[in-house]
Image (tube, rainbow, N blue to C red):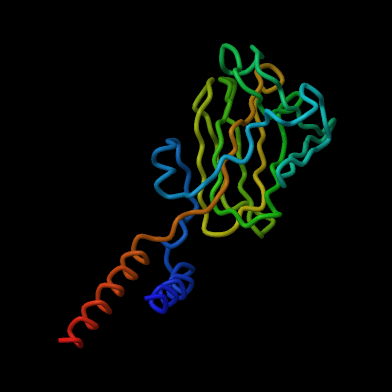
Amino acid sequence: MRALTTACLALAAVLLPLSSEGLAAPSVYTSYGTFDVVADTTLVEDFEAVVPKNTALPSFTHNGITYAGTQATNPNVWVASSGYTNFGVPVTTSSVLTSTGPEDFVVDLSAFDYTAIAFDAYLNNLGPVVVEVYGSAPTPIMTISDGRGAGMWFTGITTDEPITSIHWTSVGGASVNTGIDNLLVGYAVPAPDVILLCALGAGTVGWLRRRKSL
């Protein structure tokens, strides 16, 4: 049975890159329940332990992930503590990653090989936030224009290659802040067809063994 498991893993390694349903093709999810079915992730950052707060920083690294400002002038990131009323919600109840002025920052994941990422997105009603998702190429794997309006919304992303960074830019952030909280990272789950193939293979081998013993 160990040999069969090894064979299944080897088969998956071959089939996943070839299958459009292997590691999920670049996709966006607006529901955690739907995202959780296709990705195995862990909460890696809620920004509560990041210090200093309410301070403009060129960049900082926490739990192996780097957050950096990318504005043309005054590039910075800023972890806002709870209690702010100038986001797209009546009042924030936890720490939020943002930046000064029209938000423009990068979340650098290049130290890992994650193929799934999710977060709570704080949006305003002044225009869409644009999230560019990068892999190994200098051009984005995908570009998301999120115009769901003022509030806190779930965003989940899966790709078929490791995510090296995401780039967040806002419209009207100098008036009503945008930002992210509760960062989840992990991996897109294997394709159902590969799992089914391994299950069928295990069943067939078991049947053959029983038949041979008769």
